[in-house]
Length: 188
Length: 122
Picture 1 (cartoon, one colour):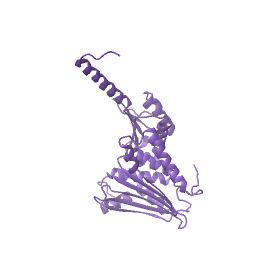
Picture 2: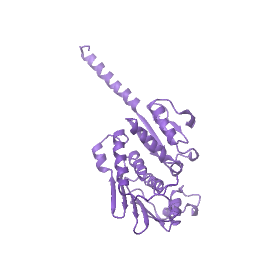
Picture 3: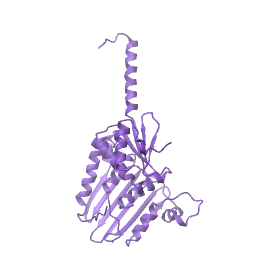
């Protein structure tokens, strides 16, 4: 994957698969401390310690265990290549929190990518989840909590054109309003 | 407009109205499902999804349900998009670029004709 935003989408899919009702995603850029942190927190099924170890490093597991993916190990490797790391805190029956951080200026640090597209994909196509997206750059903060919008919509789906336009606009403008101008080097 | 004379006529009118509403609902019931497993995302599923949502918005297409699913076991064909229109069978598309995704919405979901070159045979 070429964007951290795509990794976020992938991690959030795990929360969906775990049957979460509430999922909160935070992206934090600290220019002062030169760190980029991301977290995904859910109230899904959770995992025991053995399962957490397996999703972080699937190659130590035996064949008889349930299938595990490569999304988390790939993200962990990307973080460790940038003076950072990845941790998972999980409690069975309570939920899971994944934290990953990078040295922001590291030459190998993947671009953040299209956060708005990731958030829009999640909230428009998994509307039963209560989503909270938070993006911080130093002291500036943009929070998108979809509960009030869905309370107004009642039974109108988020994939109605006028609603999509509204939500896309909120996300794109909110993120752009605090994103550092020279934050991204584009090599596409 | 003909006058409603009997209870029987009234009943028939109501049934016709209900039937019309049912047919309209079935016609308008279109669902698009995008595979969002790690395989799909790595292959460009978010870009396909974005193209679908953008087309719905720009063409003002009401009544389309867009959802997502995990890996369906055809990782080499990702990004995968499935379309269900009304009572028709589900059509599965593979290798869906943003351009193909836009065509699926316009030609299949709206126009009723599948984008044949990307259909994965059932």
